[in-house]
Amino acid sequence: MALTDLISAAAIIPALRANTKKTALQDMSERAATVSGLPARDIYDAVLQREKLGSTGVGKGVAIPHGKLAACGKIFGVFARLERPIEFDALDGEPVDLAFLLVAPESAGADHLKALAKIARVLREPHVTTKLRAARDAASIYAIIMSDDLAASHAA
Image (cartoon, rainbow, N blue to C red):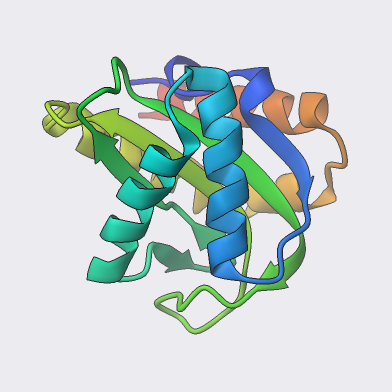
């Protein structure tokens, strides 16, 4: 599974202004609604429900919030670079400034896990996160995600 299958340039938020985890998830859910046609509230509720099980802040400033929806037709994502790091209850206790929200159909099963693993693989690379933190516009961020996705695919 490639990140190109999960995200479009329209799903990139280059400078998300959020002071809390809740606000960040709401704003990312709004963008997810725009790119998918699904109701923002349904996306937010699914992601929040998953977040209650345990934080999706995976460490080193990265979070991968995710949720499943019956009405969702295919797995897709939204990426945000936050203007300022926010508290996210991450596993390492560090604030988050890079977030990749993933939405999947309830029936996605293994594909949902493969997508999460792919995102985690790309976002745990220090050279990738450094470039993403330095990028200032959606086109640059999308290009970084795509180029590192291709590099990771060839290395695997």
